[in-house]
Length: 163
Image 1 (cartoon, rainbow, N blue to C red):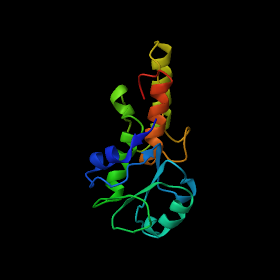
Image 2 (cartoon, rainbow, N blue to C red):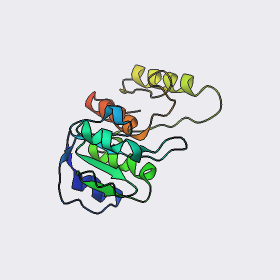
Image 3 (cartoon, rainbow, N blue to C red):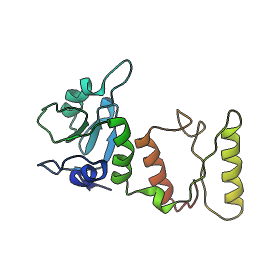
Image 4 (cartoon, rainbow, N blue to C red):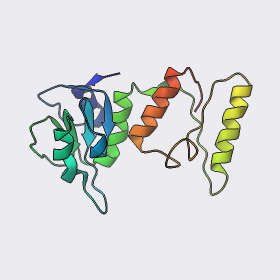
């Protein structure tokens, strides 16, 4: 799936850019940037994604999601907080997959992964296509927003109803 950059800008409340490349994914790791991939410059406690934007553009990123203008020769969507905007941006790019799924959240201190996988197995045994997302299917218990949206889109594409 690909969407115009202006649709992403509308979703995150940024000004529409002059150029409107098609966006196929959103990443916050410049090593995963490339053609069609919007690079989100997230400031962190040890590193600032804005410092890696030039590398993302060199790798082919057609646009940037930033907190301050960088003037690197590609369209930029400027927002107050990239960390807040990256989720809605990724959802827009992946077709808002959560709107096509029933979502179940499990919280607590211990047993979350086990509970998620028991629930998914139960649903599947009852004929309701389901999958779990968590430490057994990813690096983190809760993936970063772009990865979560990719996984939700994959669930929709696979015909699953519950995540």
